Amino acid sequence: MNTKKRIYIGLLVGSLLLILLIAGIIYYLIANRDIIISQVLLISIIVLAAILFLILAFGIIAIVIIIVREQAIPSLETIGQKANDLLFPLALFTGRLVGISKDRILQSYIAVNNYLVHSKYLRLRGEQIMILLPHCLQDSECPHKITIDVNNCKSCGKCDIAKLKEMAEEYNAIIKVATGGTLARKFVLDTRPRGVVAVACERDLSLGIHELGGLPVIGVLNCRLNGPCFNTTVNLDEVESALQSIMKEDEDRA
Image (cartoon, rainbow, N blue to C red; front, top):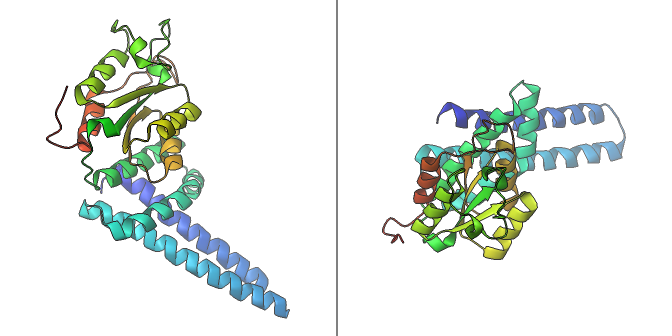
């Protein structure tokens, strides 16, 4: 498990310990009262906290096992996903408490997510995969509206959209360009892909992955040489590698 993945896994464990600490404080406060209702409440809280702790702990162990084995285990996937979803906001909070930058935490989260998706060994057809791109990849001076139809791109070569469109055609994949999370979710709901290769910044990628839940999403970070949300670029080899990782090996190209 490389350093990038260890950061997020470590924060998941830290979040679990934080829950245990909060439960201990609540126990201490209530245990010092000799009222029957307080004792009943105390026992209820302890039982619920113990159940939650065990479920989340087992979920984290499931994630680690899948990463170490480099292979998805169906019986562990669901609980691992649930623990990941529940602890994600708390992991962000824990990371900030110990001084880890938000971008670094999100990069680690995306790396863990990508590894879990790769471990599923998905073998999808091109038409079952969506390449989802942010509007900021388009040249800021381009007059053509590609969020309505990416085929409006005139392939002038000033941005990466043309090459990504060619890649989608080559692999027979769906390609969409979204102005934000709302439109991206609409594209996914309308098209119903079996897998997504998404390009965006750390924040948008992590939120998208978290909100889409069980849908396999491979995240590829964009390059922001001109600042956030303005004339961004992406490593085309990384996009193609992500696409190939969830496709059938014998899938015919256009």
